[in-house]
Length: 469
Image (cartoon, one colour):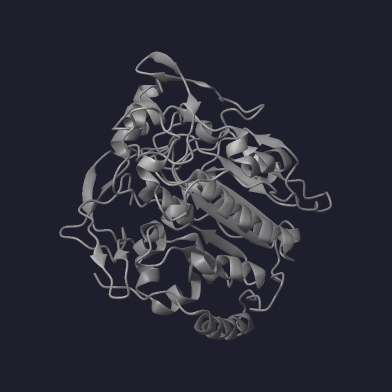
């Protein structure tokens, strides 16, 4: 019997990113290869200088930007948003109701959010076990108001908000970032073990969860449908949607922190052998997230773009939700001001619940998921204004949109069995003018400096961590 994830029925250093000059040179080479591909019967690859890729699509969307932030449940960010399903200001801890307090911009530390914490939080469907670790009982039971994240709420009103969207894996970041690019985690349900860091000559600490991970006996547990666990190294060979796009003659990019920057370990492609061990493919498709804004200004985004942030801008506790919100606002506003806007769909989500309360029991679709509910915002000139999408979705759902838009066969069962979000759009209508995010979230301290004891937004008696990274 399939018991689902809740116990009830259903070594080498890889190359740094390229300089922009070298990237353009290699991109031009890729285009030349695309011409050859076309001459032999393949699909034409858009030119580097195309403003709008000239590929055929099912819908008038020519670019998709899929942006993943970190560690927030749906209720933590949108529990007070009018009209959503399962929004609440009262949580439950160990069977006892407790009011949710206003979530501070910074947290004093992280809240447990590994596989074990997920099982405790869900607690066989009771959804009352979020008070784990040093800070969970207080800060796991928090909720944001609109004034703290104004543009997220603004875009939810003007575009689309999915309130039945769940993390793909019932666990932490590592498996969910694989689902983000592949619609599969290769059986992974938790983060790797025995990960260490290494100082880099040029500064910074190198930390990876992928093929280039540092440590003795680094491994991750992989589980099959029967529940059998095996140890696996942190290098996988399952196919990804990016590679599928390449095979179809379509360009794509993955923006992330680079080695030595906190957040590099979220780059799921460093755990995909076919990419990290192929320098040409890596340099062609993997870009520093620090170049994202310039590439938007230059109209240089390919048909499909994945984005993960540097740690300090990711919304991952203990770092500032306000600074993360304002960084996302800059990205979205730049796309809206560009020539790309008319043909773009932006999918904005968070990779897992991060230990924060949510009252909705996740559906059980297989032995790995789904995980606790997270938000999805769909921002496009074709999104129905103010739609609250209640169809069950997960991180494979935007991948299904990509597959159907560009005529690709769904890569995995998760992608095949989910919907494509077409109901969130009105492609018969004329594209709407952009609704810019015009309000900055209030922030304290700098982006890069954890405020520690100087922060006044925590509950009395709170003692923050000394090392936030």
